[in-house]
Length: 125
Image 1 (cartoon, one colour):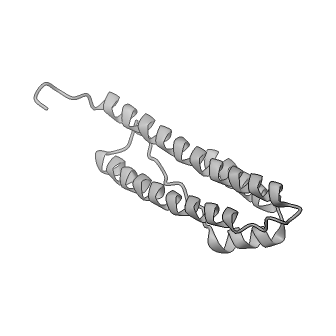
Image 2: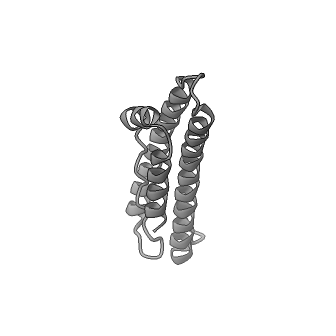
């Protein structure tokens, strides 16, 4: 559900600014897809390890996305009447990517805690 909301929010933001800036962002900057985090109440260790790898890749791709947004912002026409609105939109897209990263990290950590609760370590481990 949150992933659908996040994607919809980004789509609305993209539609809210000038066509040339929108075209530049759409052509150059691709928001990476959030990885699916398994439910730690039923997930295996292998599934959690795979989710961790997917999350790390997601973080790396977010860095590229954010760099692209910053580049797009630096290339905005300083004389444009829409400059402030375009900067705000790019800032919102950037902040949205941070929110998506935080949301995914929190979900992963919750999943790990649930897994650990159902698989407690023994003194032998």
